[in-house]
Length: 99
Image (tube, rainbow, N blue to C red):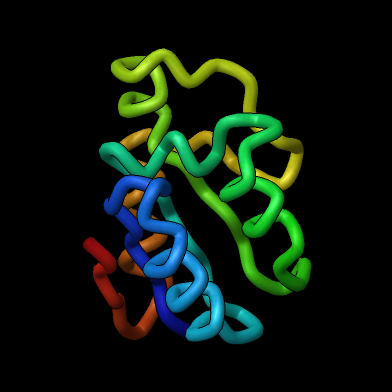
């Protein structure tokens, strides 16, 4: 199981698509920094992420959402604070950063 940490702007949809292709069952994806815009309800990036298999958990760093004015999140996304981010990192054998 791998934790994928995506921090690139979702305007770079090619990188997000590449990340999605790398995700496997049991993996988790957390978006943070500028990437929280990928979790904005109704965005093209959110639709892409929501189409991933249910066995891949989707998380968004809540502090970064607040800082960037991202309010409504699709139901698939779990709003996670820094403690939950640390717990995700500990729960996965490895991590991959996408930036």
